Image (cartoon, rainbow, N blue to C red; front, side, top):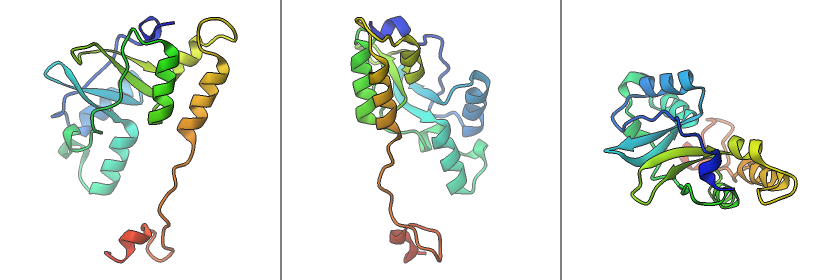
Length: 164
């Protein structure tokens, strides 16, 4: 099965100059967890609801004052609509992401394929991906990354505690 067959085509996106208040409203209205960031017709990045939350929680600024370009992740990992779904799962596992923008050769956004899309189309046997492949991808994504120790006195990572 090809990514093109199961990807979401009707997606919302934002521009680098969109503020986080407007981006959060799009996420809320569309009930999605991430927005592609499109600049001059090309995919420039992805911003997640988590990115927005952490940016606002650590900057002491209003959402209307912070721009997507100040928060957006680097150019995201992507796939092509002609990739098979198993390839998309391998990319998701390696990058530890739940969603992949689908772009054409020119870098133009064509859609998004999510882990949910793939799970809904998984089959036990046949040419598509198996339930086991989907579960293994979820496990890879959810594995805890080693975190820096936090000091009890400040609650900050140990490396930052000295700096204040």
